[in-house]
Length: 238
Image 1 (tube, rainbow, N blue to C red):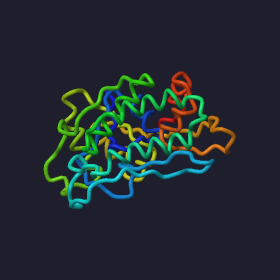
Image 2: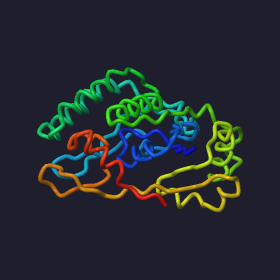
Image 3: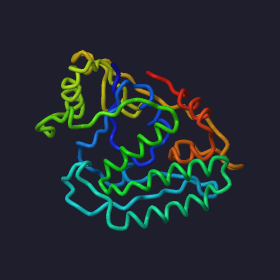
């Protein structure tokens, strides 16, 4: 069985969903330290032909708290309304604006303020919309003690060893993971390691020059579900 474990990212890019679709189980890796300026609470959309970074505010807290212990701040509710107005300005004339807006309204109707839980919920809603049925696994199923005592590779191996009881033998990671993980190290523990590389397949973004790797929101605005299914197959597995 194949598994991918990723930190919860806010409205992530298409490659994140390619990863979810092409494994048997997807794990939300929220048992690691929350790092500012990552993709956990921000992403990019299209605005007047340029990438625009949006950020959902997170409460100031101890830097030692892990992702699952972090919460959006009190302005989160009003910020969601502001964000929908930004999308209206940027995508009102997009071919699938109405369908995507309805989906986002469903997502934002969830008043969950825990960062990880909110993101997991919106990932599941989007997956259902684009016909991805991969089950999700909680980090509580693989949490290990004394994580700081291990290297990045060792931590992943320790977690996967706890998951061998359910038949996990193959770990798939985005292509950027080749800077952290080596296939030889994983093979010593009896786990196959592969890297998924999302290929840039341009789709029409109004009449602008194509900008790759924007939030899944951009993909949803410009593509039907059938078209997205095709895009989900545009990757290389190495």
